[in-house]
Amino acid sequence: MKRFILLFTVLALTLACASKENLKGNQDLGQNNILTDIQSEIENLRVSNDYLLQPGDLLEVKVYMEENMDRTLRISAKGTITFPLVGNIRVGGMSVAAAENALSKELKRYIKNPQISMLIKEYGNQTVYILGQVQKPSAVEIPPEKPLTVLEAITSVGGFTDIAAPSKVKVLRMDNGNQKAIDVDITQITKYGNKSLDINLMPGDVVFVPQSIF
Image 1: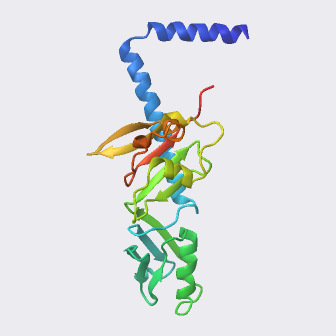
Image 2: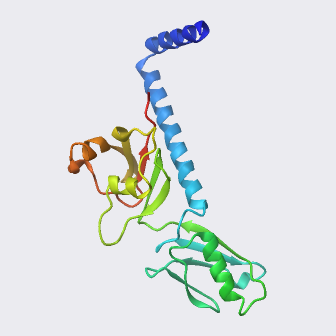
Image 3: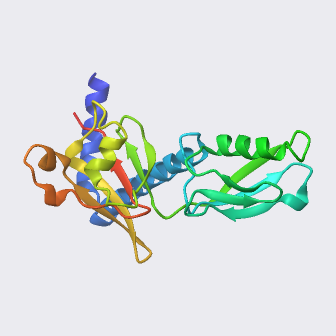
């Protein structure tokens, strides 16, 4: 315990003596670490079966030992792709694995035991990501008929965990090539009815819910 107190004291003195430049560097490093973690979570969602294909996604489709059938296809607004021999096939709303199985099933009428692989090359522009201390971190599609707010997005993935900090939610957004962070205090919305803080999300936004500091 004494060792911990001594270490804490040394750390506090070191920080107190640090220059503003060093402090800024530490803050930037911390921010970069957070952004790296968020990007990692996004990639994990994209390659997992939790991600459902949607219109606008660009797929690289390959058939083993049938190179002449390899295609790069964008999912249409109706959720379909057009593939040789089978024509239109619906893949929207499916996981990558399910879409591979669906195409394989159709191709079995023409090819013996077709082995399909799909890779998402680009993502549709209506996706937002809900990450951090929520029940089920997920990629969520903005519905075409109405906007999606921060609170609605968090609710759609099961709400907060027990250790979340609802008052410190951040929306990370690309604006003219620069990333900016928008603070959203969800407690002001849910407890005090300040609905003006519940902003509409834009395609590509990341909603990040940090852990509460006890």
